[in-house]
Image (cartoon, rainbow, N blue to C red; front, side, top):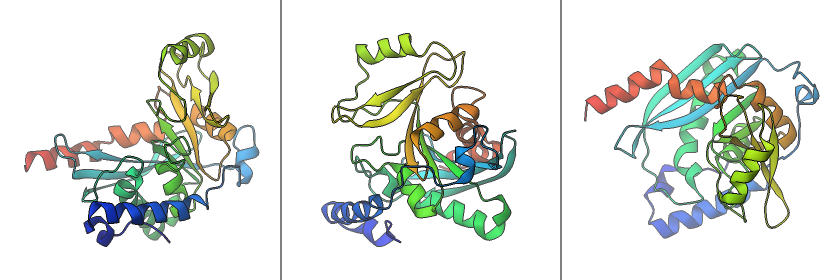
Length: 260
């Protein structure tokens, strides 16, 4: 299974980048951009019982110390069934377009710990705070996590990644105002190359700011967008919101900050 290794992280930057480019190309070839599970084709997602959310939260002022978190919620009730957070040292360099090599290994490990210790709570789909195919290289962290874990995965971003002609300009702002009138409204993110890279979604009626949905792995954009909307009590879908608001995460981060 191709992924970044500790050895690669210690290589000179140019050599590390070549390794990552190779690994990324290999992983990208395995991305599936269509529905693969029976529950995905059901209008109410009957058969879906567990949704997961993952993210890395950094200690304030320190870009090497972070809490890697995974939560699993029941579906459709969105009650927390499981949470895991672990402080990690992020020593891989940041390179634009390759963020997953810096963060994904810790999130994959969190999924693996769950599969080992409580396999009955394994999520049937993961929501990642970031992008999937809506990415400079067409392979964001949601794709990376999906391929490495084998789970359907969806990218959910709070800001538009400006790539392939997509821009947060006046035209985009007009589209938000004109096309996202109510909760659940959407419009496609069409690139200059003619490909739909994602969907802007008004996820919460009281929020005028959309979220940006993109395919990560093993799920169509249509199904991914529908599912994200059903997971929203507020603007950010609950699996990701719970990762950010977890008391365990807040305690871990404040403890780490207090020891510096």
